[in-house]
Length: 315
Image: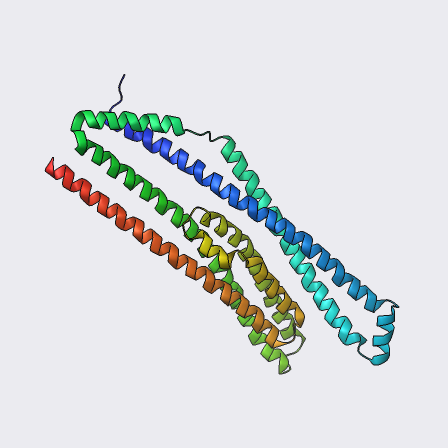
């Protein structure tokens, strides 16, 4: 029994939504797989760096020739403090990399599970589309076919807006985390100034608490950035966006290097804050581009809807 136009539209809407979700998952799975491999390689690299930094500290703490020479020249404590700070930064970066790998692998597993329950329905979708076109040709000739084309365009553009908004939401989460991290660093910087003027142990503790909070938000921003990159995998500007966003792990490296170099020196806090602000500006730039693309899709929908209205009125 032949289906009505209303029934076909419902079927096409359901099939189209399923197929679009499957297509996006496949694209995102590919992008996330690449990222997971990058993160794993980075973790291995950082593990080697951490091992080297630990050896440097042990060499200075032990009875090595270098340690004896530095003890004689009076530079040992200065060097040890520097090596310990570098080891601490390396440890922080390595732990961050491990969390990144775990998060990427968990998200990949979720995608795989969803794809298992989402078979390809291309043939079913094409059959329903042809059935609808045949019905429209019978009822309205070229005009009916044009109506079908416009409806398909509107549906396609609405799907596009949905994915752009999802990408924007992920980017806003990144920006929000970076914004809070910047606020915490600003507070730490203010406390640091007070500390330098003799604020005492309590002020020092407060400053370090703010720095810990800033590190936590940088960690959250790192995870959010991974999700942002995945969402962007199906957006036209991905190749341009990844020029800056793809190196977010490097941003985290600079953040940790600056923060652990000397927690008592205000300049180091300022350097960490600058890296947070620069990353936020990059994210904001991509968000503006996404907003522009969404505006283009909305304009296209309005144009198609206006043509549909003219055809309807003329009929």
